[in-house]
Length: 109
Image (cartoon, rainbow, N blue to C red; front, top):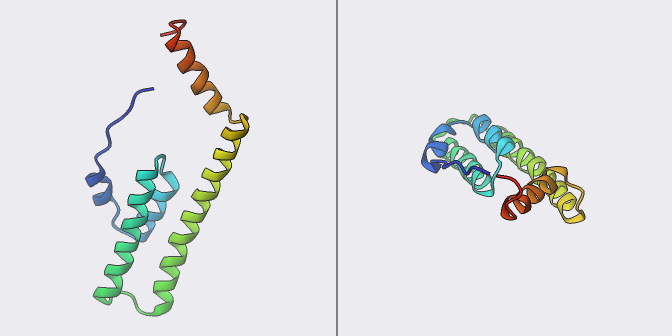
């Protein structure tokens, strides 16, 4: 498997709105990505509160709820995948492990 270097600074710069943060959480493949998206989401909310850009407490609550729902959904999917991996029923994980074993044994390249 080829590891691709990801510039964390660039990812943070790409997250400018709550919607960007939610999308980043939904598309996160690594824990680091999710942490950055969550952090940026709360920084954006904090900035909106500090700058007075939000009209009301309801707007703040709505932004927090949107981000929280996205995080909860991603965590639920991750938990389900972890459970499948633990049970040995996750096809993707099984294929990855078998391929790595075959590569280690020199059977495939």
